Image 1: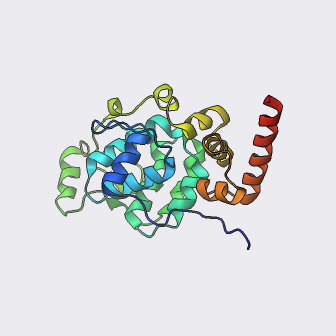
Image 2 (image 1 turned 135 degrees about the vertical axis):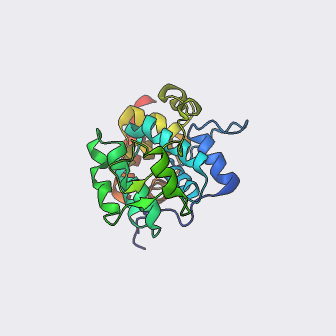
Image 3 (image 1 turned 30 degrees about the vertical axis):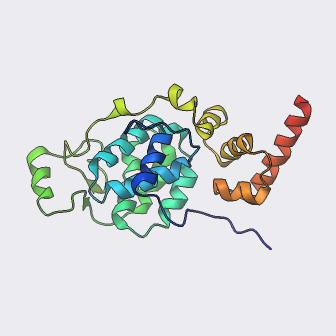
Length: 227
């Protein structure tokens, strides 16, 4: 049977599962501690979907996470997954990353996610009054997303640093070591479970079968050489 590459998860997490994933990627919420090696891009997308439903605390935290850890995001994976989303406002938020992260050229292509009119972040008509009263959040001012100042609070103290997060999130560690790529994610997964087949590895990381096959061969070679 031929291999069909998976681009995105069937359903993004909500509720307690989302909370656990946010904790796992280094967001300090609640008093629970988890070392689950959750997929970083899935957690970010799920957090944005939740945040745009009116949970601005979650959206603030996700935005701050992106600002701090943008260099470790697999941009190709995030773009592929957001491109196929149907929610216009979610795509509009991610299109704004091109402006939020304007010094990182990898995010330039995100502008194409929403080329229509500007969209208000708020869910009610009163939100436009807040924009007029407080002005726009300068981080999004030139983007397609209109965000009033003070809506998305600065919560950077609630985000683990690069050094802290790399100590217990395996994929993040390998992205720091190798670079944010499917290959790094695959090495991370194999370090946790060396018995994964190429198909399983590709599915877990949303990568290609060919890359998964190559990584497994390299991983076997390194283990043999080490022994």
